[in-house]
Amino acid sequence: MGIVVAAGLMLAVSACGVDSSAVSSQAGSAVRVEAGPAVAGVQGATLIAQAATDTSALTTGQFAGSGSLTGSMSGSVSITGSFDRTAQAASVTATFGGAGDGTSFSSVFIGGTAYVQTGSVSMLGIDTPWLSLDVAKLADKLASDPGLDGLFPGGGSSPGSNPDSFLDVLRGVSGAVTTVGPEDVRGEPTTHYKADVLPSKALDQLPADHQQALREMLGAELDQPIPVDVWIDGNGLVRKVSASRSIGTDGSVTGQFEFFDLGQPVSITAPPAGQVTRAEDLPLLKDLFGN
Image (cartoon, rainbow, N blue to C red):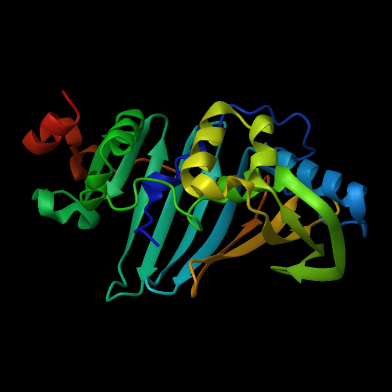
């Protein structure tokens, strides 16, 4: 899988303005949890799509995910993080493995600024632990020049890197839904469902930025069904989602995310100013970003 970095997780912040009034939880009070109902067919598709919508609207929480790629290319990534949509903030730690890799780093997103541990961009000769970047400018540059991934590994979205992309595709459930039964996720009771999703079906239900991210992530495979497993609690919130699909003749990509401590307060702060180098202060990045 291409190298996946926290910049690819900016969608976790991009929906920060979503109105959470449709969700019974609020920051500062934990979500009450029971097992989700056993449903199937059209009713099951509606339940899953609504659960994805409501989970995306939550203001605070934490997530953990992993992804792997097998075949002619191989690799893996594990991700942990927290979000506060009201504060437009998220923190992410990613660990990469495979193909001789095995590195990890952290990023913090606050407002329109991303703070990235400089170990991941050490070639720039930065003498502080953190590099700050304008998120919108970074996204524009990576979209226009994918070769910059070498400087900002994984600045683009990839399967297995982005929790919101997993929730987004759940809005495209197509066909029958199977209820597997009650299962606990991180000690919380949920109901496990199996379904196929058609990403193209979800597109018109998503904000414009999420539509673009989904198109970039799946490309020509938007119309290919993806088998998913979803675990939903009694409040109709997604607690876990996993997906896998084949690539080529001998490869596959898999990924999963878990959501927990939903509705509970999180603490996300920017690094101290003295530990941060601004991208616009570096000659190389000043040229790249057109400053």
